[in-house]
Length: 111
Length: 114
Image 1 (cartoon, rainbow over the protein chains, first blue to last red):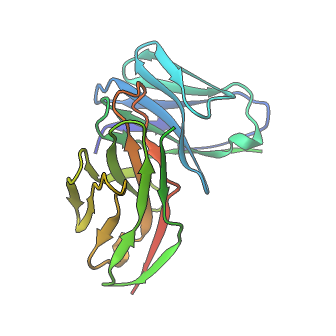
Image 2 (cartoon, each protein chain N blue to C red):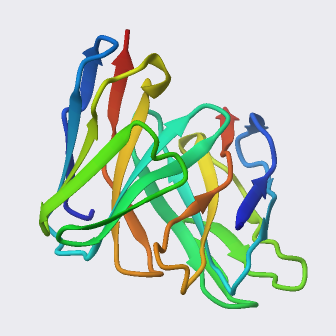
């Protein structure tokens, strides 16, 4: 299995609070991704990174920001969590058009 | 934009039955195609992939053939087992799209009963 970890694995928070999710890889892949998974929607891209300090938006980026200060770490921040951001968040890593490898996911509940 | 359509679930089969999960796509370029599987409580794992027309991906008894003429990548297995119960996602990446993001179908939940 690709070396990807996510933390925390579960989090419950309240509306309006900031939340940061962390993705850590040991594979030295260039590309890192944050997806969210919701029933009836499959997985949708939030943000991605193509190198240290190089990030861009995906299709559902509103309300989220990201940072990548090191190759191995990709942070997803919800500046002010809302109930619509209750979801399961997956980090993935890859090299261009090849296979992407997924982390175990973080289940976030916003009350 | 690119999109993937896969058959709605849930699908319930008896053990040793034949499985087909249909997947069709639209893409602006020449995509690579993937099937991912998600077991309960876990992340997604690559099941198989194909990168050009007429390629057949296979793994663990599952197969899918890249059909450019019908823009399809149907997943098949000749004899399913209880351990195959999971959610299956069809997905594509279009090279040259910059982000190399995966575009997913909505997933098909498969339940196999003894």
